[in-house]
Length: 258
Ligand SMILES: [Zn+2]
Image (cartoon, rainbow, N blue to C red; front, side, top):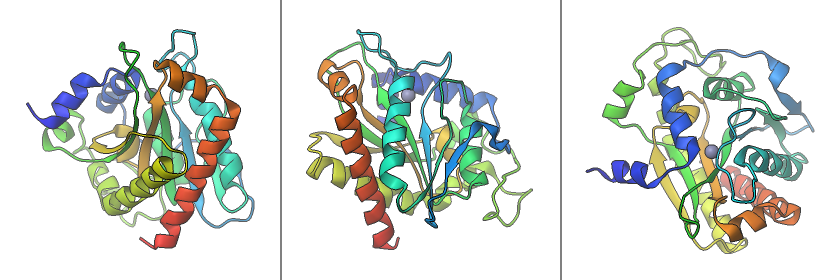
């Protein structure tokens, strides 16, 4: 059994089920700007923040009835507040509605993202389980075949020269090194100043990242099913702190020049 299969079995969050199901069903395409909110404060770099889930897709759920979709949006807004002074911030979703994975990736390309950060929380039947996990896209031949990654699809990004002939599976791997660098910057911030004890960097063939033509990560900021993590995630001051530390990580990423 591969490490990835073990990981898949361990991980029971709804996010995974959605990501894998959608991977087989959707292809990316251009999207109208109606679902997007942009804030241009004069910064030249574009950070696209993707609050996971929305609408009928509630994501993980705590015993107290809190939904992942609501907290990812609150965290995205906190991130936007921290980033806006110096970056152009785009949210893929600004309310409680469904948005498929392809539209999230397309938003990043349409807005010429310099970075794409998708926000999620973990969920487990075991309440003691809690961890922060940062995923970058990692290809795997079997997964690529299963998810139809050989299909040619249009990509609405000015950075892609061959707009009609680009293979979907070839887009995100171009940014693998930069994505891992971003993940390391985030991990460093979370572990040092924010004092999150367990932060893991993992790779997986996540569809929401696959078509993004920029360094991209999925952040799972703790498990909503863990009571202590849930209480923290309900606290606006904590969300603000997380936003500030993500901002510091983004600064460090760009200062590293990678
Ligand atoms: Zn999720």
